[in-house]
Length: 200
Image (cartoon, rainbow, N blue to C red; front, side, top):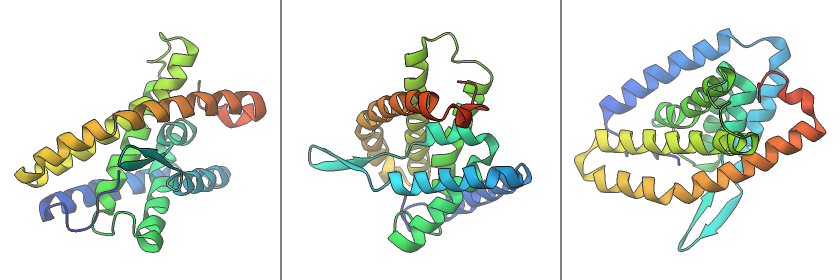
């Protein structure tokens, strides 16, 4: 799900970096002292979940758990994902520094959109288990679309790659949905106070 350095064109890199910087500043303005522990924990969860690889045919996919992170953090999701992406780029070589803004939009914006959908009750018409599944499914679907769009806007020859990315990530959407379903159920039973502000 990460875009490496040198893939995107300069106009896309600059525009996504500017937008991402604005979102990180917006996130920091809403950050309170009481939020730091949860933001740190969610940033760590995002960082660590990338190590959980699932074999799928000739390739592997990995979890990112941005749905759960989004509903727990709301507007603070941008700073949490930014920190994790920065560490992944500098320590592990996932993504890159010039593509950091694009990767932040791909990962964090869908998480924030999911938070808005949940907090405003727009998923309440679904049964509880389906709603929990969608909290995992929707952000991965959006992240895939955003990634495909950035690739398609960068170079015309990336259009085929954009379609391939969308097709390859369909299993990820389903797996993230199922994992999120079980994770939210676990949190509700074990540490329900974590979900207090999530409105699930």
